[in-house]
Image (tube, rainbow, N blue to C red; front, top):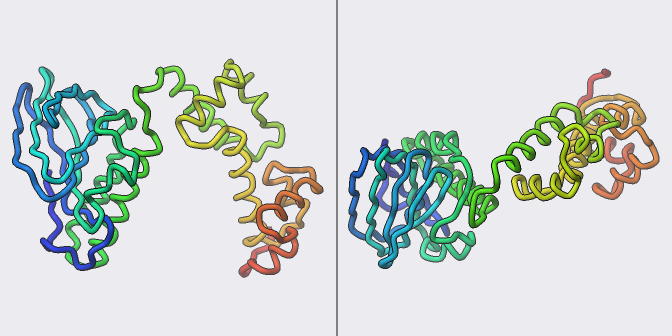
Length: 273
């Protein structure tokens, strides 16, 4: 799959514009040399293996690895014995030459599973000939880069760490409204040390499990305050924060309003629940 922006020059030049994107599956040992272009190209490896050569150095690439070629650099890709599956996108625009520094991208880094759904949305946007299509494509390009940058690490975390983080997040997502759920209960259920859970969860998601749990509860509480006419005490209970005094302080700290004042200021037509 290969998709180019329908206009050579973007309708609106931004710091970063997405120029093209694609999904390649190279046959085993296939060599892909390409000349330099005036754009930056980012690759995200999906499956198989391969290698790329940049500035005289050859780097081995496995699934979950992201790498790039800067503007003006010739491309030199070689698929491994089992073939190579990867996605890519290219950027031009006013700041594309400084993109690696802007996003702290290493020449090669582990970035985790490729966000295929974002690339598929990007493909659809590149087919849209309007300026809005170009803008949406660039927004997705930014999102892909931010995702890669947030996941950046020199090597993939150990498998158990990834599993523990994902299991913890899934359990929090299902049970965050239960006031009994806290980090101690979570670590007991998963059979891991508190420090280990903190490390692997923060590395994977960019926030600690305590922060993540608290943010889910706060978001639900604010939603209930503005979308229902439930008494404030009931909102607190449903959000997993049954201590009304603590709940009121939490809402005030994050919004500068008491729960009732926040509701009065931001509520839309709210059904009685």
